[in-house]
Image 1 (cartoon, rainbow, N blue to C red):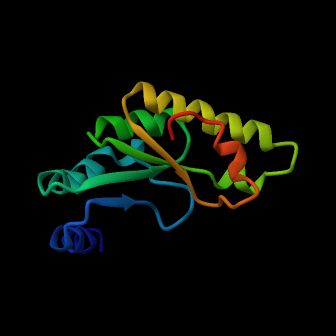
Image 2: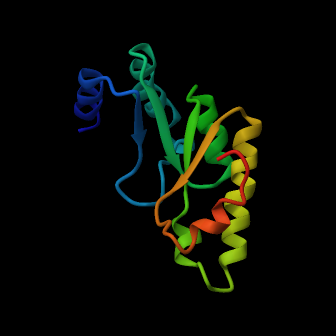
Image 3: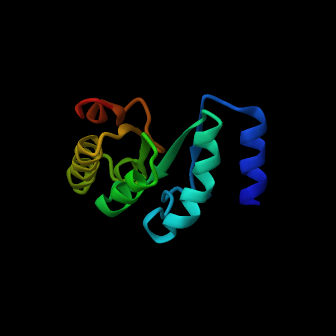
Amino acid sequence: MIREMQKVVLKNKPHACYITSEKMTGLNVAGQLAKVISFVGPLFLSGINPVLSIAPEFEQIEAASNTGVRFVELIAVDYSNNFGTEREETEFQKLKNAAEFAQKLNLTVNIGHGLNYENIKRICEITNI
């Protein structure tokens, strides 16, 4: 299935390709680094920009950086699910710290999954996303 998806992307040659897990938890890049590198390598050669959709965890961000990608999307599901609760600040800070760490590794950061017109305002406080 994964190689089949790669073939579709290579055939259609989009400018960018988001690579994510079926669950809204993000890819486990750190746990399958070689597999991710073998998937994105041919995309790079075809001029396609892979975007890895990952959890806002330093381990995942560092692993994503090691694949050679320039773009990541930090999954905001935990922040979104906890918006308006006592855990909101904790989850927001996780995203903010993760975005800052990714930017220090020269990654361009997007944040998504679960955001809406009510909870996006806090996300806009994070610079350079």
